[in-house]
Amino acid sequence: MNEEQELRVKRIENGTVIDHITAGQALNVLKILGIPDSSQGVVSVLLNSPGKFGIKDVVKIEKRELNVREVDRIALIAPNATINIIRNFNVSQKKKVHIPIFVEGVVRCVNPNCISNSNEPVTSKFNVSVDGCLRLRCTYCGRFISEDIAKHLL
Image (cartoon, rainbow, N blue to C red):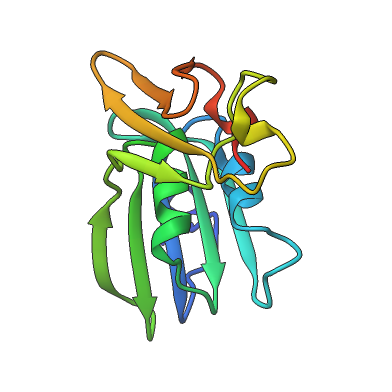
């Protein structure tokens, strides 16, 4: 292996690799996953890595597999991401994230007067649509979120 072919980040034995993250969103993915507080293994982050379809971010997390709620949240900010489950240095599962059609308790409504932002015991609920761009519509007040979704994640 010559110097140009050298690996930039070490392979992981067991854990998850989140690939094809929209460039600039890797730190938001770490926020979604509660890293560094909830991680016991090594976490590697590649920012603006060149890929087949342009630049992308990559996150590698040792000793951890993601749950459905975490993957749904990642899909909202990185709709082209791929989740790779690594076991014994090999990819045992590889799947693309799917944008959910409905999310609950994931995003805060932009309307400060929405009942989901009050002191009432109400969980935020949004219908998700992709018609050119990703849009979330609050089921209580009807407000839309289509930009900076990561900023509104709970």
